[in-house]
Image: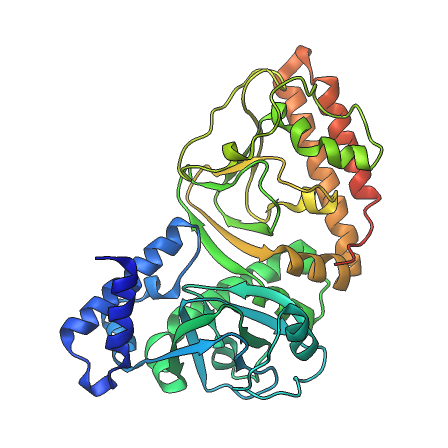
Length: 401
């Protein structure tokens, strides 16, 4: 059945009063929710609907309420008591945090305009959430007031609204488990060990769980950096195609008056088309010297390792390596804006620690490659580039945005 037609049928079925919803419609809606969850899983994202047993999902389908709101509608206001939550089916919302106790507007108000008007009214943008995302659950999980503002940012947004009583009958155990996983990771992660309780809670809220199977591609070399990943379990291999580094970073390095730190740019320039494709394809590998094959294994990253930290700290515009899960892996993803805010601006001591960790890891990875290559050693260009990265990280100025 056509996706839009099916979504329309689901919408019509959910508009029927709960007591009048029939078994066929509920089975159709449950199947659609499961398809949604599988589609999100293929993109590495977790959808809570896919974590539920059939009897629990059926209860949720039967008693949830469908809502469609338009752009600018304030769904959740920071500082309010929360008695409901949402799961987004179609559309997107922005999550913003105000420095005050809460904005002047109230839940249900419409804020006209765009990012500037949203920011003036609701505070700093900390994330954009879409299909499959859960919003408003913190107040139900922790029995606290709303910790953020949520506003519809797409032309329209369709959601299911879940009351506190329905939440307690259906989602509570699944979301409590996810909350425990976030808190457990934060309590053992070295970069947030010196965070105050408020900052640590903001760090926990910014973590989005993602799962990958063996050989799944997590990020690709050359991709724009929009997120930083924290590895919770499993192993991730990093592959570098050195022939593309010159094309990736040539203009960036010239703008900083840095030359001769990359492999010869006589090789083909970076082609963005090669950064997209089937997400489950295993990249080619080579055990030869740096630059002699299409890709070489640069490193293996495991628990508490990060993906994207080097590039962010050295202020590089794109990812240095393709990351491929070597085993089943669980990661937490954080948006770049939140990583900069929490790690580089709010946590001053944490920023120093992050730079030291990144420099140490870079040096360790190069030492391991040097040992693996033996007498042949590393190409001068590889040494120069890593030395440049270490210097860039050392001299890193705090981002202004």
